[in-house]
Image 1 (tube, one colour):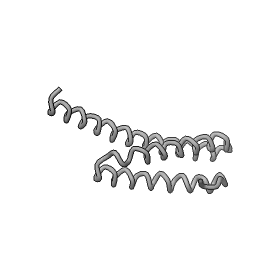
Image 2 (image 1 turned 135 degrees about the vertical axis):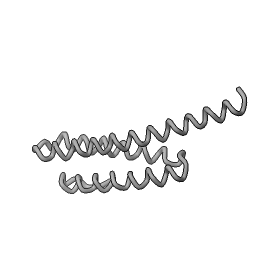
Image 3 (image 1 turned 135 degrees about the horizontal axis):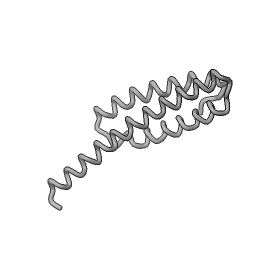
Image 4 (image 1 turned 45 degrees about the vertical axis):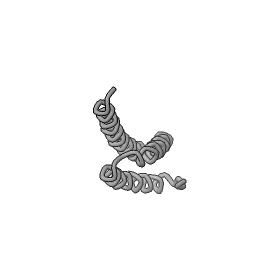
Length: 99
C-alpha cells in the first residue's frame, strides 16, 4: 500500500466518523422528541429510558469529538450543546436530576 492509498483510507475514515457523529446527534434528537411525546401522554418510564439513551449518545459523541477536524468539532459541539439543552429541559419536566 502506498502513501496515497493510506491517505485516502484516512480520509475515508475521517468522513465516516463525521457522518457517524452527525447521525448520532440526529438519533439523540429523535430520542428526545420521542421522550417528549411519551411524557405528554403520561408514559414517564419510556421517557426516562429515552433520556438514558440520549445520555449514552452524548457520551459517545464526546468520546469521538477529539478525532474530528477543528471545523467539524465546532459544528458538532454547537449541535451537541442544543441537544444537552433539550435534555436538561426534558429532565426538568421529568423531575430527574442531571448527572
